Length: 116
Image 1: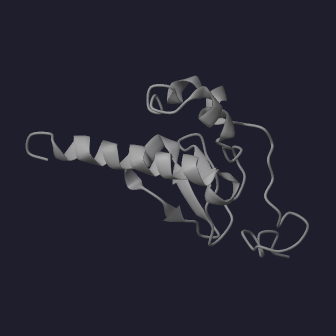
Image 2 (image 1 turned 120 degrees about the vertical axis):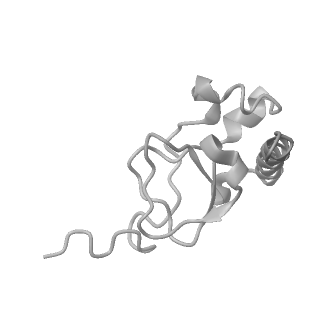
Image 3 (image 1 turned 90 degrees about the vertical axis):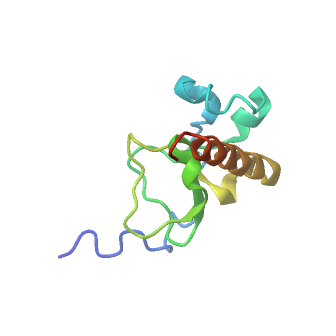
């Protein structure tokens, strides 16, 4: 009766993380934003596929909005064309921390703006 009744729930056949192959290195518009990372590090960054639900309670970064920092997903969140979500549970610890540092650098640059 309610097809989305269990949308975002973390159980069933798809409860294991899926690595479908889309990586940060495949998205040219991210090159400038992630210029501090090596090509090998870019290859390690898995992007949640367009239209896929984020895992409720899991931590993510949005490569489009690194300045927002790490966040915890809710059951209703779905990857769309305005975001490049990176799941923490599929990201190397060192790379994750470097991405968070890049977000902090963006925040610092924003706070240096006049009137900001």
